[in-house]
Structure formats: structure tokens, C-alpha cells
Image (cartoon, rainbow, N blue to C red; front, side, top):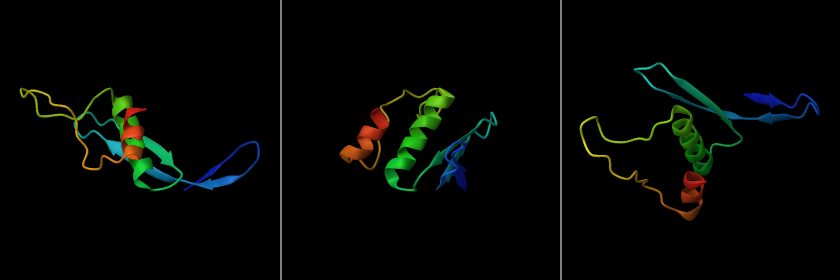
Amino acid sequence: MWLTDPISRNRTRVSMFVASLPYSGVVFAYGCVDEKQLAWHDAHRRAFEHSNILPGPPRGQARSDVTYSCSSPAVLKALVT
């Protein structure tokens, strides 16, 4: 997909990240300039913020802190900021 700046007419290729919540039907879409891991983690973070939810255990179970399998400083920075 291409994004065109309406003023300069410069075109930038973007990849769309789309998340959907199956029970509510809520859909979140975000354009990323690349498909690197950092961009995808940022898109996930934005989707959770937009939905005002955090991933966690099923109802009735205690919530623990969210953990990520990749804890490099760059990824952690994207998730925290």
C-alpha cells in the first residue's frame, strides 16, 4: 500500500498492521513504514492502547505482568514509550 503526502505528493510504501477483537468486532489498523520487529511491537502496543486493554489471563484468574519473548533494549523501549 502507498501513502501519498497531500502537499508534496511524495509517496511512501507502508505495510498495514491490522488487529481485530473477535467478540466485539473492534478493528484497529496502523500503517508501518517497514515490517521490522520494532515496528510490529509498536503497532501491537498502539492497538492495546486504542482498545484500552492489556493482554492477560482469562476472566477469574489473577493478572500477572505481561512478558515478551524478545527483551532487547530496542523492543522494550518501543513497548514502554
